[in-house]
Image (cartoon, rainbow, N blue to C red; front, side, top):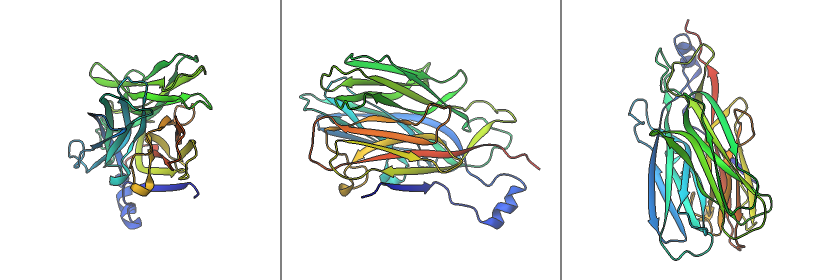
Amino acid sequence: MLPTHIRTPICRSVSLSLALTLALAASASAYVNDVASSGASAIGSSSTQPLFQPCAQNGIRGQFGSSNVLSVGASVSLINDLGLQSMNANPQNGGAGSVVVGSETDPVDSDWRVSSTTFCADLDAPAPDGNEEGYVKSVRIVHAQSAVNSERKKGVGARCPEGMSVIGGGGDIDADGVTDLGFSLSTPFFGFGQPDGWNVAGHEVDPTDADWQVEAKVICADLSTAGGANTKFADDVEYVQSLSVFNSEGSKRQSARCPDGKKVIGGGADVEFPSKGPGFPGPADVTLKRSQPGGDDPTSTAWKAHAVETDGTSADWQLRSTAVCATLHVLPQSK
C-alpha cells in the first residue's frame, strides 16, 4: 500500500462572485484567532492508555464558530518502561479534539498516568478590523538541543522570544538505529501561569550504550499586540495528513507537507491500527521518537514523525503525521 496524503480544508471556499464583492471591503478568508490550551489526565494499568480531549464546540469563547486542534503535548509517568504513542488531532472527529496514547514498552506492575495539553483555536474568524489582538501572527519556530551522550535520561526546553506566546511544539529523539528510546514528555512549559516554551524529555526504555540527544521545537506567535504594517497573519488553515504503509516493519518515518505557499502552525503524530478504526492505538511495543516541525528555519513546511518498535512485534501498524498548515500574509490594505 502506498503512503496516502489527505488534505482536509477547515473552511468552505467562497464563491467567485461573493469573493469579489467582499474583497472591496474586507478579506473573505478565515483567520486564526483566540488560541487557548487545556489539560487532561488519566491513570490506569492498561498496556496502552488513550486519552481524548475535545476542543470547545462553539469556539474558545463562542465568538466565531467551533475550534480545532493546533498542537498537542503529552507526558507519561516517569517509569522507564513507558513511552508516548500518539500526540495528534483526533482523526475520528475531524480535528475538533486531540488523542494522546501512552504505552508500556514492557509490562508495568503499577498504575501509571498519561496527561495531555491541547492547543485549540478558532479557525474561521473574520479578518481583523482594527482589533488584531488575539489573532495568530508573526509565527516563528525556535529549537534547542540537549547534549549528545549515553545518559539514560535527558531533556531540553525551547523558549519563545519575549512577548510571544506558545501555540504548539514538538520534539525529536535523535539516535539513528537505536530503538530502545522513548518520550517521557513533549509538552508546553508554563512560566508565570502561561506557556512560554516547550519541554522535551526522553529516556532509555531498555539500557543502551549508544549516544543520543533530544531536541525541542516550540511554535511561537504574537497574540497580544496589534502588529505592524508588515505583520503576517495566519489565514486559510487546512489539515494535511500523511499515512505510512500498514505492515510490521520495525521503524517508520512519515512527513506531512503543506501545500505550496503555506507554513506549519501546528501538527502531531500517532501510531494506529487502521483496521480497528482511525486513532485506535497500535501495539504497546511501538513508541514515537519524533513528532515535530521539520527543518531548522524560523518557519516550516512539514511535520515529521518517526516511530519504532522497542521490542520486535509481528503485529502490523501504521504511522500518521499531521501538519496544520496556514497562509501567512500581510493584511490587505482597506480601500
